[in-house]
Image (cartoon, rainbow, N blue to C red; front, side, top):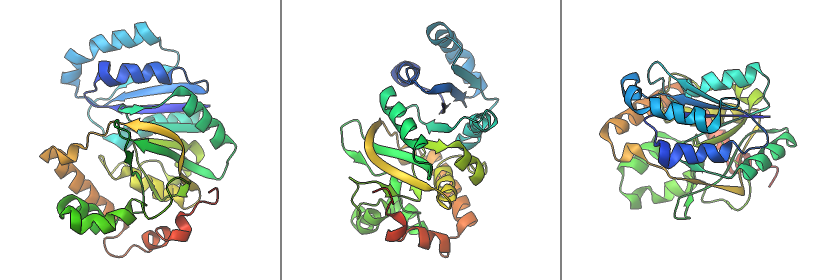
Length: 282
């Protein structure tokens, strides 16, 4: 069985959340779908009351659980609430995903069944496309400070070569790859693998928590980019548009490098080697 958790913040209910719920609640293997709302309570008073009534009327409450957080807990900390319930109830798989994803229920059921028959896989991410059909390169090597800050602040022509390697574009992305960093927009996790790795590190408010968790799972499991299935991600890239979110991004990436090492990270060097990334299932 499968649990799904989606963290919301001032969500686009009509444009994103409601259509996504309509699709996800068709999943054959779904046990529970958690909506973890990090929106500020004062904003929810006017915007969410009507939507909660719509959720209850349109979808019922058997599989759908809406949880209003007391404050904005951050991405990983909110997801951990649902992940701990998956662990408690021994739910085999847990899907962490964004509300700006479009995916079919049939594909999620197929991923679920595939994961159950490949016990060495701890995490899976399908091919991710932009709404216009172009590919998002969201399976990556572990970043160095130059990878993260260079692609954001250096001229594109200076960062292009390094960025190509960082985003695994030097590999055959038509085949599975055992990548040490998979995007948090869609993380199909084996619950035991996530629990053994320690779940999301709650010191990160948002942004590098997906890098941090994937690399810890990667130590003992395959963490696969698997292009047999495709999803669409309407990525907002808030830190490129909003100075506050850029500052949040910088702060949390500094916490990440303080944890794992800025210049010297022997595990990063090992995991980023070609032979570590090549999947045994390719």
